[in-house]
Amino acid sequence: MSSFAIETVGLNFNFGQQAIVKDLSLQVPKGSIYGFLGPNGAGKTTTIKILLNLLKSPADQVFIFGKEINSNRIAILKRIGSLVEQPAIYGHLSGKENLINRCLLLGIKKSKADEMLTLVGLTDAADKKSSKYSLGMKQRLGIALALISDPELLLLDEPTNGLDPNGIIEIRNLMIDLTTKHNKTILVSSHLLSEIERTATHVGIINKGQLLFQGTIQELQLLNKPLLEIELDNVGEAATLLMENGYEIVAKTDAKISIPFVSQKESGTINTLLIQNNFTVSSLSLQRKDLENLFLDITKTA
Amino acid sequence: MRSLFISIYSEFYKSRKTLAFWASILLPLIICGLITFGFYSSSEKILNLHQPPMILWLRYISAALNVMGILILPFYVIFMAFSVNNIEHKNDTWKSLFAQPLNKFSIYAAKYIYAVLLILISLFLFAGLTFVFGHLLHLLIPKYSFDQYDPSSILIKFYAKLFLSSLGILSIQFLLSLLWGDFLKPMGIGFIGTIMGIITANVGWKYAYLIPYSHPNLVLHSSKSATDVSTFPIFTQEIYTSLIYAAVLFILGYFIVLKKSIK
Image (cartoon, rainbow over all chains, first blue to last red; front, side):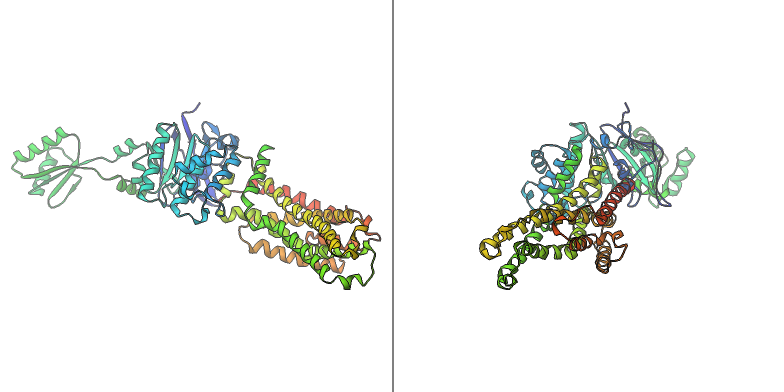
């Protein structure tokens, strides 16, 4: 049995002549929150639709719970809950009726509908026509629809779209709860890294249909090497001195020098070296490029 | 089988508050009601013709049949085929429907069967209401002597035939509405088809039976020309053609659904 909930092997997908997904090899471990990141139009939604077999993938390229998707469509879909793009809701039905309709299709008890309404905080609007819902309420209903069958794997395409800060925090907590307490696996797409950073255990970054990075969130942070920023007088001479002592200068301004951070002890050594050579050091600080910039760098350079 | 059944039930659940569903009940109610009212208010004129009960019944039945068969039935079928598919187009729910653990055939067939059921319900009500309202008319105006002839077998045969003749149109329109999310394309094609059907059936073109839109018209024409109204055959050329169209297009539609990518 594969330890991956989702595995794609060199997945390619075209719309006509246009390649949307190129040689994509996703590996989503069971029990993880996999942040699927990329700018708009990177191929995230297409990939999610392939994972739901809404778009036909070539044989033997997509495996869900170790099973090939095209030949196990129904068995796989039974274990997946999904929210793709805008939530798919029947506008002329109330929120509750939308959920009951899904219960009918899945053969589950109708009482589950009320449970889900409570979970996403829509109990008060249960009998309101869902076309009258606000964007955030529709999104909540979409999440309720995805969760109603208690699936092992959730595919959520930009689930916090249109939610207010409170709603965003609730969804985040819900996702963490589902994976830690209920052992679910979640693939969540977003174009905002800051969004993913707070929940995801694993990250995949996609741009123009290609996977640029895949690994744990810690591995992503490692990519992002911290810098030691030194503020001092006489920057020019100090830079020469540091280079003579084998340090690499990453950046230099009128008042600051940045070098790669190694350890706290090493920072101390550098400080001593500078002071012994009569430089006045006013500050030493650890600088971490925020992930948002890193994300931009990664997607730009590709 | 179970997934087909729950899909059909879900179609009912989704549409039970829409005009499409209620139209299948209201349409026969309104048309039969209007005709009955006409026969009630101008009863003297009609009774002055001194026709036997059977001819009176036929007059009464054909009033609804003519309106229905010539114009309303084709448009009603076009509208039904449109609305069962439009409920998914409009709400952008094809993707969530096909992401459910149900086989694609059930989802597709359930929609088709549901559209067929709506037409069946409507035509059944037409037959039933004609019968009931006829007897009601007789109670109000006993001179109609509608009790002296039993029209049920004629009613059943006519409406059964109309039902079968509408399946060809349904299948074409169902496919068009499945492929296109907008109203104008299937409606426009349906409209042109219906006009063609009416013209070709009325001028008695030899190959009119090849156009599904002419089938309801042909049914009325051929039955009228029959020597005895009560003994006309049900399975005639246009009915066979309608059924063949329906079967072929239904299968074709399934292969389109299988191949179709849900964007």
